[in-house]
Image 1 (cartoon, helix red, strand yellow):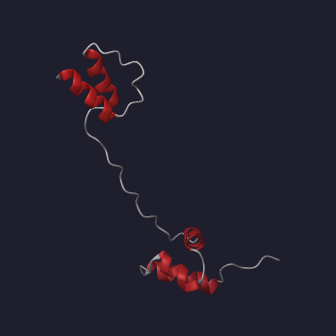
Image 2: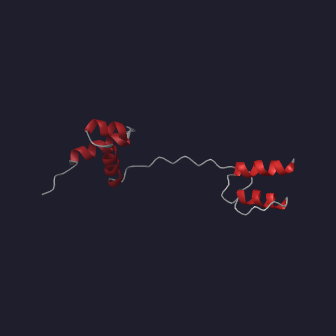
Image 3: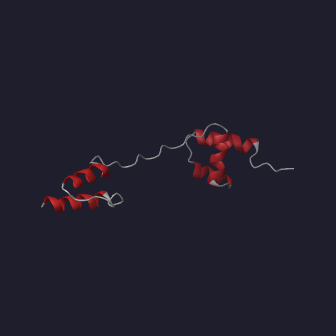
Length: 98
């Protein structure tokens, strides 16, 4: 017979603590369970709300494809430069602009 990981009382207590704003890390420490275990239990109980992931930084400048087209317009053969970084392509364009 399988043992019970969370009693009904434990489940009620962690749900109540979480809904009152207690951090999952603190709840896990207080009951001697891993953070992952507590988070999983809260998900199964339907109360856990994941924190939004931070947005990735976006470069609003020209794309690598656009930069390669600009470089190609100078008469430079861009074959093989598709893997270059944007910074390297910009430096190369700067070299041809001088």
